[in-house]
Image 1 (cartoon, one colour):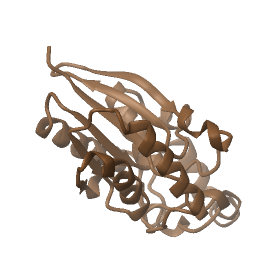
Image 2: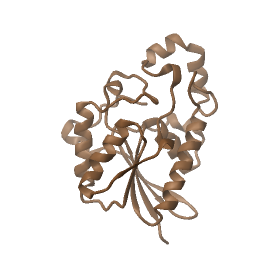
Image 3: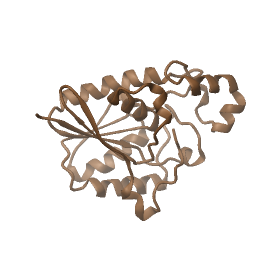
Amino acid sequence: MEGTRVYLVRHGETEWNNAGRYQGHSDVALSPRGRQQAELLRERFRHVSLDGVYSSDLSRARETAATIAAPHGLEVNTVTGLREINFGAWEGLTYQEIVAGFPCEWEAWRRDPANKIVPGGESFRQVMERAWRAFNGIVRQEKGRNILLVAHGGSLRALICAILGLDLTAVWRFRLDNTGVSIVDCYDDKHILVLLNDTHHLETMGGPDGSGIL
């Protein structure tokens, strides 16, 4: 049975990740540490067979993808549907600032991330629906090949929930670190999660620091 292997990768760290600021659609560039993380990813994937590379159109994902793609001579195909969740009025704020300024909205969203819409932004269901459409379109186009897909903490969480058929409350039940690698094998009738959030390529940097949940 012919399968399609998809490497799901979260982008490298940004200064906003390091400061705990919610980024969303804000186009925040990789930090120096994030570029170093991406270079370590490049070495991890240097001898992995890749047939195609896709990323969110936001620069932090696009640059991470381009760094990995370079040794393979592949172009990065940008897909808007893979963007991070739109955090609307919360973009640029820390968790503490959001809780202080939007206590009711925050609690409602935390309890029901699938359906509660961030003020001026999106719900996780909306993110899942667009990311799932994008993912399925890529898999159909690249059937039987090995592809790399670089996106964001929130959009990848929502996508993994869709892949595994999980309720969206599960987005809070696993972590995806900056440059964490997950693998999904896709077949006509099922998807299999092979690996989740592997960061062994960061060992020379002391491993992930757990910052920048979203």
